[in-house]
Image (cartoon, rainbow, N blue to C red; front, side, top):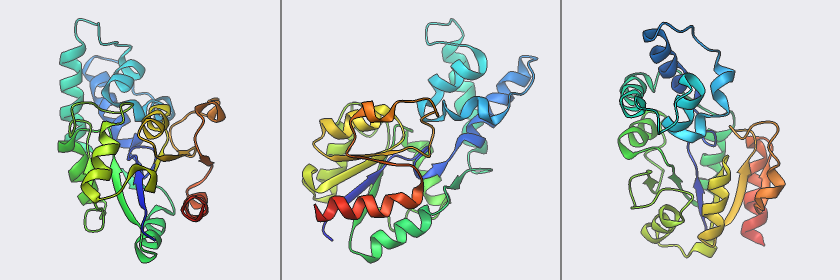
Length: 221
């Protein structure tokens, strides 16, 4: 099947929230604050340092200590980002099935390259991943379509022959703007109260095992 399947990373392919939350809890401990449970962070894990600093320390970008805290967080996260992060159940088998059936697949994430690429390698994805596009690979991160268009161009596919799967609304906005089909990974970090149909994606996957059928339906369509 000569089609391109692109995935977001955090909350779509990998459950990174435990390591992201652990890094924020280190910052809390240094400030004399108690640890917060993982569930406090899970719905913010797709929003990068900005979301996690808001959840863990109540800091917005206009806070006078925000830049210092962000750098501190990224340092802690880089040191511990492989300790608890795993692929979601069924993702390894999905990627193997895509490869065996002739699909090309890649990753487009807003996680910057120096963090994204080592995780892709750590999780054993690098060998068969056609491309990894980070948040700093192109001048504009998602929800701008540039990262997705870059991935399609570099892998030799037209946007209409690609589908993008992600757990955040900006993933769907970026995919639609790029002219790609889109799937919401509702099992990720969307939040249980999110009105996913309002995102106007092509389809919604409630569990990872739903992805194969949705991809096949799109490819045959």
